Image (cartoon, rainbow, N blue to C red; front, side, top):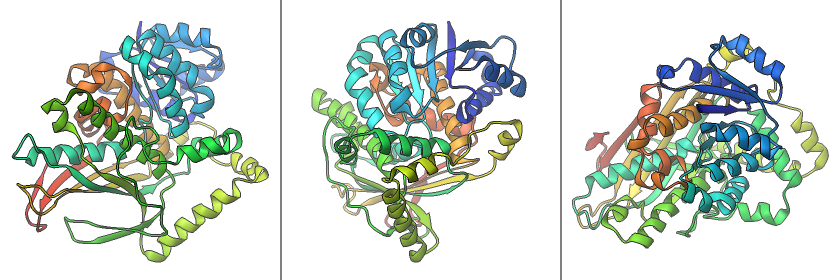
Length: 434
């Protein structure tokens, strides 16, 4: 049995996952297999990356469930990079859930995630399969910054029975890299094949959560957020992936709420986020550029409802892989700043603010997303004893619920992510770095 199986290894993201795992400092502690549709492309990948002879190679058609299940049965963890996930992902998730195999992917497709929750969450809890979609740029950073802020607030709480709870949590993104062909393909496929009522439903609050909470604010032309560490006001426009990220964060919130409602235990109460509102935006230099970004996205999505426009856009983006491209993808960057504010409490009459930042070098979609997913898989494989309590029950989980502090540590230690969490009570000078 192999430890890690990379599905879609010859695609751009699959190649980067394989490349990262092959050179990982812990590579001696796991076995690796790669799978794809073309034996020639798999052989070319082995040559390009100088993969060891010990690596297992499989040709598989993800539309053939029998082939997929036979391959999944011989693996401990599947890393799926074959998208659009709504089209190609369900057979893979089904095979994992049925056979108690763990699963991670890079999806940003809420409809796909809702589908696998409805179909396979219960089965996975019975077989012990931990299924974690959205382990890349969508939506691991968003999920983890809220998790870290919540932990920081809970650490401050003097009354264990009434821990500090989150009122609002806002993330701003600054991204530099190429526009992902996977994102293009997903948008085109979703708009072209999904019934309108499903698209509309996927935009509602708490779409992936087992329970509903406070309603989110409506999208707007310009967003603004005060940084408690510097008192600077940052502004921005609508973020393309804010809907999918918000859905994942709200599922984390909902799973913790559901656990408390069913157990009423002090431990479950201590982990709850509280009645929070989450939102996010793309950081810009000024108000004008923020408004222009939002309007551009509105116009773009309107145009993409027209079939010929979808066809043209579907031809754009990056499709080829190469050794030269591997180096190019190491440029670019991600910088996420989250500000979370607590509800007032008896111990802290004034709201406490937590400022969390995640930054790293590399293309966000094609370089850093594969790294995040790879470290997520390694967390399941090598750090299983340290995972949060809910992870050990299995099911369709989120990065925060499945990995918790483990993924933060792994990204800092092995992937050189810069992650800082500061608690600021009142004045900016009164702070504590975690």
